[in-house]
Length: 437
Image 1 (cartoon, rainbow, N blue to C red):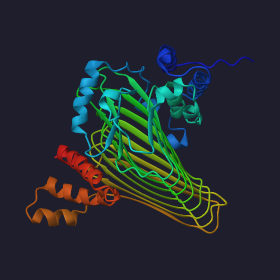
Image 2: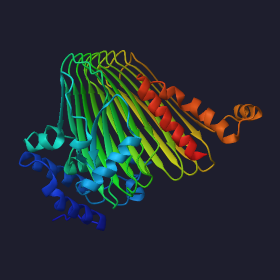
Image 3: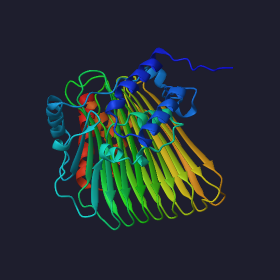
Image 4: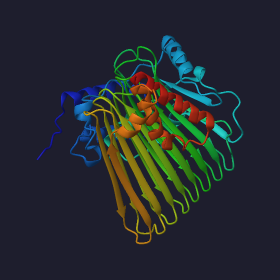
């Protein structure tokens, strides 16, 4: 019996987009074969839907419906618009690496004399040199497979053993396209033994950028005793889609501190997978969703404790207004050999309207018997007694609500160690609150 895979109109559109984009995609030989295999895996699966457990609350067949064609390479006008947008999202004291419409923009990036022990290359030059390691991925996730097939550019950052970077690295993804289009980026950060760095990722849009799609993937490797502080800010346009993943591997006694905040994009989903590969490693991950209107923001986090004596902490906060929908899925797996694991997870959602929706799904899968693990989830409204107290002292209702919201998300934001980065996030949160007034 011959089995023929029937394609929908959406499937045919994606196939056409891939065929048209192949000439622009870097890499040949084995790299091109990896792309083809990944695209075939995506075609078999299609867009994820609610019958897949990990995508239960984020049905892309309903929310997104189609994959847009690849964005054109940025021209001079696009770079000018991107430069104007960068001024609004600049973070003082950081080394900026800019991707415009999925293409590395050297003219907008800080490629001056680098610190000793730091190497920065583009994904394009790595793939064109025939190194396909960055495209090796698990094609069982259709969105990662699509990213593998279509990735046009990104940054490859390598930090040598013992190097301590004083200046944070700031990777800025700028969308400038005025027509509906998709951008695909993939980046790598590799820290050697005893190395330390701070990485900031920002997703922003120029004025006039509409209805675009961003597909991003980040691969991180931490050597023994390495430390990484990772800050991720999604401030995309409110018609945008942002679908991203991360794969992090930790060596022995490595430390990872992460913070993410979503205040933009119509639909966003971030799916990090963190693997403890060395004993004594620790992860502290914090997140905040500030969403309104009909925004949909999904964080699906997988923490894989594979070795003994590791610790993880997850703190997640969501503030949801109007008819927005926040999703947090946190899964902690403790393997049979991962004795003495210490893992805790807490998620809280604050609903500011009767139509706001929060789905929190913490999960523990424990296969070891000498562990300390726990999780919790709460959902509620603003405390009416505290609100009354503030209003009785002359504060307007919106200002009183803003103070309580700031206190609610403050625990997660205070986890940012760098003072200037913390102030930048606080300012972004205040902008959201002011826009809500």
